[in-house]
Length: 107
Image 1 (cartoon, one colour):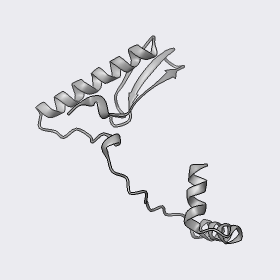
Image 2 (tube, helix red, strand yellow):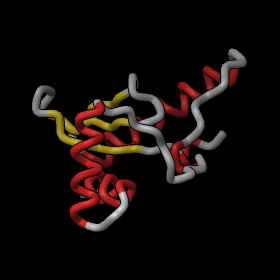
Image 3 (cartoon, helix red, strand yellow):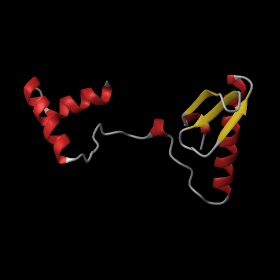
Image 4 (cartoon, one colour):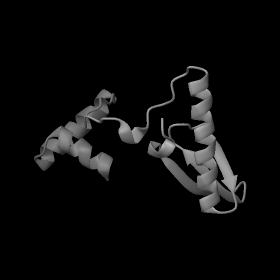
């Protein structure tokens, strides 16, 4: 599997005083470097090594988030009083509860 489809991010780590490269599909892995480019290069190599090790041991590597299909639906459990308050807000605005929840999540 190519590691190009994984989700990488580089951010500043004040604790380490360096840039840190991260991969969403491998949350336990990171790479510290002085420059963002070096942090990205480092985390990509660490992920490639991890994927190779997993393949060598017959272990499946995580599916890239970018390659997954998302239906646009998920279930959320909330307390009944919150449900009631949201339903009231939606009714007062003349919109569905689904539209209200979607707008709140997007905002």
